[in-house]
Length: 283
Length: 225
Image 1: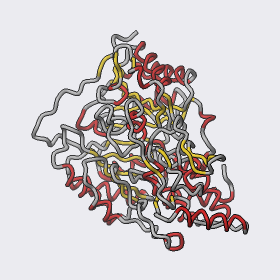
Image 2 (image 1 turned 90 degrees about the horizontal axis):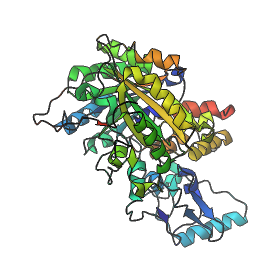
Image 3 (image 1 turned 180 degrees about the vertical axis):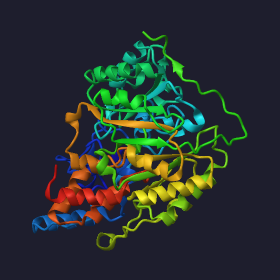
Image 4 (image 1 turned 30 degrees about the vertical axis):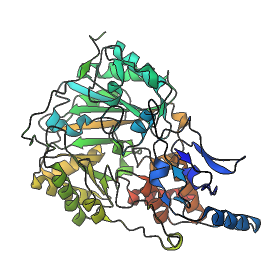
């Protein structure tokens, strides 16, 4: 993303709306500027701000007059008055930034929409996580911190050594050059993302082991982590297996998404296999 | 992870936050899903949602690409639910956000009776979702727990800011904008309702809960944490 200096009036509105804090008023040119190293191409500025098409010269003049008189104009805070944002034409490998950061676009790099996959949201029709299994989503970077691929790589290597199964239809898995080792394409290591989600599935007996493994990974990386744990309920709609394990590990289960089981297969055309990709035997 | 699971807070803080969303699975039940998802959204309107969401195109309050100068004085902050339904043009997640359990329960029961074959999820407190399922007479199929933030949590802002920014789980609501809105409410420059509307427009999938945001901003006015 870039900001056209001929249009920018340095109102500063955009400096607050960047989730990565990557926009600032450059004290030399006195225009809003994007720190491209930190920008994750989420397009929150371009898509989220309303835009006016005011004359930049007129706006700058008015702002100078107000400033001289020590008056503060109180405009709407989510508006770019001169439509100064201009998206860059993204190329590989930078394009993965947008794919993992702008929720409105499909993954150009992987062909998969969204940062993750359907998880247990469609478990009633996909059968992704069955009784006796636990699905983990290990998310890095949210809220508002971001994550570098080099940190995701550390996590993937650690998980692969533990012999987990990476979800096949997942953007991170799609970028792996060696799934059995958890190795991601080296060309993207210098890219920063809003967030990324590793999805794995293990037998329920390994729940505590995986949680402790994630705790160890957290000490090696420089971002925040959110663990999501998906499980199949019994016929009465109860989870008497996974919740007690998580509570014993010290988690308070405040919030969850609940798949209500209303989904059913209605397509007349059969789809291709969607088996997870194994990273080898458990160690 | 589902973006709605990033909402932070204890179970009590979700008393006014119920998200019922429908999703079709590629290759399983996506044939004819566009019309069903539109129907899902339209069915929600009589139950007085506080937001409707189209994961591709946004919610019931959206930014404008051609704002007139008078908007600085008389901007419309009323939700446009019909626009969400009519603008639903791709098969993606459709969401209805409610600020009370009764509305969520009644809507979910209606969805169940419509029997569209879509996967329907409820994102709220664990107990709140259980009550909705019980009201409709369906056992829970699966649960996805959110275990909260871990790792370098020292990089996160204060709790009121997090409560506001994480309501867009995709991260489109910047922590710094949430902080600015708290400050503006404290200064009396904007009402909590107006401040919530600015935040809501950045949510690109329409699950932002302006009613909960308004409550949090009111709470933060005198005691920012």
